Length: 232
Image (cartoon, helix red, strand yellow):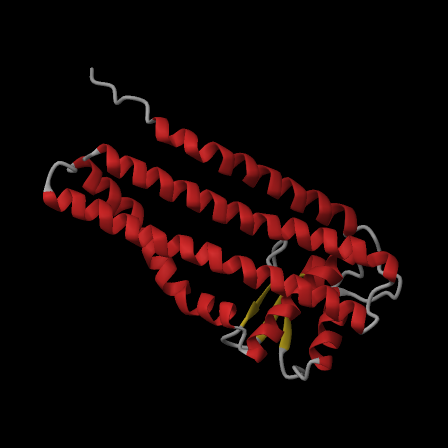
């Protein structure tokens, strides 16, 4: 029986896996801790989002409740903010921070924030590229000694670079939305000064998941390049 040799390049992904686990733990622990800390003014996530939207002349944006946990998002196509029940209807520091973060995306959309516009533009391209990159690369890898095998590997790498671009451009979008969230909550007196640290902790933890995704994608690209080079 023939056994394939162990692919040492898979070890490159270990730092990404470790950091992803760490990021998920940080999000879980921060959300769990601050979802139990009630806002001193009694504002729920929906309350905070509505006041922030109104103060930025975005009163026409609808706020909808959706199922799930931490499924909150702003949809720039329908101009709708969707908040999970644990955020929309709960008066906690975590809920207010997350709702304010989504409001930050709405403000970005209103102002034509370029990284957000660019990310929205490449979303369908990125999804298509990500789905095709791996199959094309490994078909080419199997037949790598042929000219079309090399071409498939190169095309797969190129497609994966587009997927990596999406994860990278997401970073400034998310960091900026969190910055706007904290600034808006403080400027509009929607949180007590003692609650600001909790909001920042929740949003920093959430941002780590995007950093982990970018790191994992970068390491994966490096792995593909090394595998491609092994066929030369």
